Image 1 (cartoon, rainbow, N blue to C red):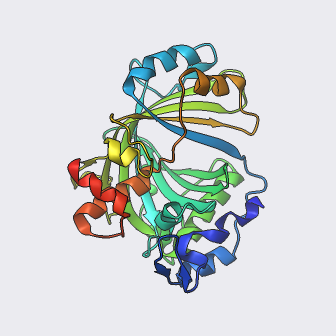
Image 2 (cartoon, rainbow, N blue to C red):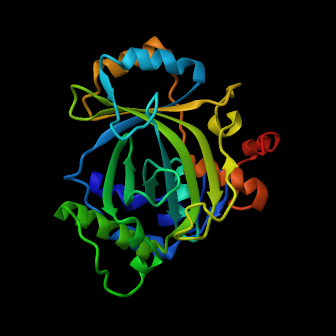
Length: 311
């Protein structure tokens, strides 16, 4: 059931269990309590996502191939049109959401806060609960003014002065607030990159995105948005191809295809035409592994030690 999406978030529901790497996991009580109160996604839009790390040399051919089927995102600027995304990743004190990705739990979710443009501050802030159930993805999204975002939203006082266009958006906002408070989530990482985006012309939902110039910055701040720290490069072959038998010899562009259950034929043909190989690529977890080289935490798999040659 999609309504069970939050029922197995990494060390969350494990009491004295053994992780796939042989580490004993302790129960994270705040998260365990949170997942008992299920979030219903039954009426939400379920979509499917596939990610690929491709050499930059393939991008012009892919652009040409999708031209009959797609149109550029109207918010993009330049040629090709693109925009800057800055995402604040939230996690519990025990990094339960990060470890859910590390152990490849089929049911997991993320808490992230996103804004657009460079410098930040010109556009609203989007609060997102992105949940995954096997291969299906559900996203709850709400929008608030940039100056309304902050730690104060998660205190004990009544939230005032924020207005939403729809009841659904308001419900999504309070889902985000509830989950954040129940697992004790706080800022842990900033991710920034340039996105080139296209929408399917004929489908109700079909999207192609190309992400490049990936950066990250560890943070404990709710509102710095990277203005007070140094960005580190997340664009290197080892990070982008972790856990794969044959590492890439290039720093790639992250291609993502998103569609509903009825995937358009042109998307399937695109993967065949360019011999694309699907990979797992989580920008947040990749940044956590990269930063662990400097701080020693969180625990990093042995195969990540090779990152030292790039950092």
